[in-house]
Image 1 (cartoon, helix red, strand yellow):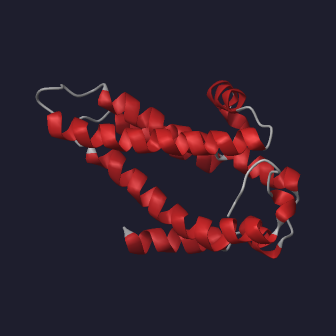
Image 2 (tube, one colour):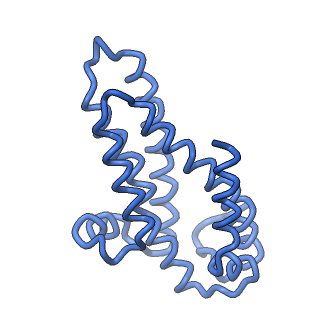
Length: 168
């Protein structure tokens, strides 16, 4: 998983968008479009976990549910961080959530595919770890993207940062 995640991270870091972010060539409007368009991935993890939890019996699947509940608490924390960032930019997260659920065609294809896959895997009670493995792989991919492209670029490009959040 780590090797594949690194391959995907390298591929993402090589995109023209992230190259422009690192070079400081992304204006705030384009940055906010990116932040907004990727929000459904953040909520998709939580939604998928919530749907998956409902598929298990509390007695027969106690250990699995304990793991999923812990993961759900972590994802709720991620959602809160992302919503805070959106609010700091003046973006209404409820509207983004509504727009994605009612008009997904306006969001990037990879976002639609990824969230659909998370919902699909949440329905399979034979292998609850599929959803968890999918999430782990995605997080393993995103960590190098955030640490190598996004965070350093935001630190060097104050015009992209909100006036109401502190990045350091």
